[in-house]
Length: 219
Image (cartoon, rainbow, N blue to C red; front, side, top):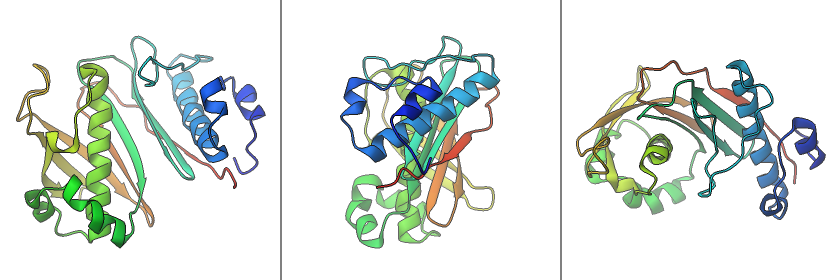
């Protein structure tokens, strides 16, 4: 999408809303790439031509029997979904590595001292970025079933397996009957040179392989 323009929305069959048209060029390009990734996956599971509108809270309005999740940042957009709507969900997130200065400034807002100890095998930038991304993915997996926000301290990272690239998060607040205090979730993560991708999925349904779109929206 190096030559992104607003006509690309029309070509992809994706609505350009009035609110979005007022956003910056990069924001519009990222949004389009995320929706296009979703469009490709939805087509794969039998929803060719499905228009992904928004709920009132601005979350994507998926087909009734689909759980889906979208993330985008800079030149990367991702989508993952599974085919059966269930009490559990799926969340995906991409984050570019924080600078050392940024990570040091925000680590106490994201990590407890116990979590920092669990992730001590990682450099500061990766430690904080990974925790942020994993908790974002958990939020995306839970929010559509909970329909109310919760903060980073509602969950805690209790273990990480660097060899298998898995970490476990545990709820330390009671969110609902379906999401009680103590419930655990596993996040898969992938590290690249400049970014981290995380995926949280707690249903037994099959997850389609995440679709990743590389974008360069220009300046």
